[in-house]
Image (cartoon, rainbow, N blue to C red; front, side):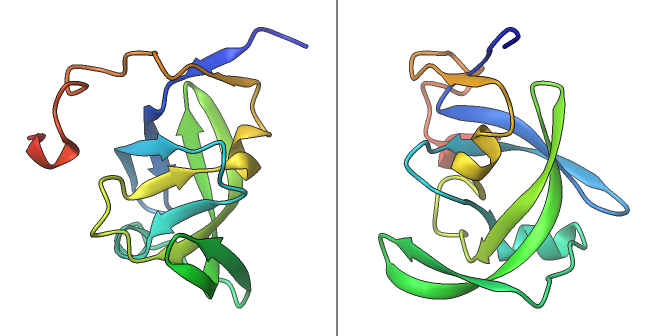
Length: 127
């Protein structure tokens, strides 16, 4: 079983689109079955939606969401996986990493892991 990659609750991830990529902070959520991505960020990276949708249960209720397949790089590991698209503009993090991605890596989640110079500030206060 190889060496575990330790992730904190917040991690830098790189979303890879067909023409460009963007590194952004993501929320790691072991309670979420699937991952989600802000619909505006997906459009910016030119990630095309499939004709699939998925029934997603969240704090805001149960809804069908469009699905996009995207590449994401975390801690040097590149994973291709599905994300549900939703407007996350009112949330602190435009990307939520759920179990579908966490199961593909040899990840261990440590809530006390420090994730950078912004750790003591709200995401809204970051430059």
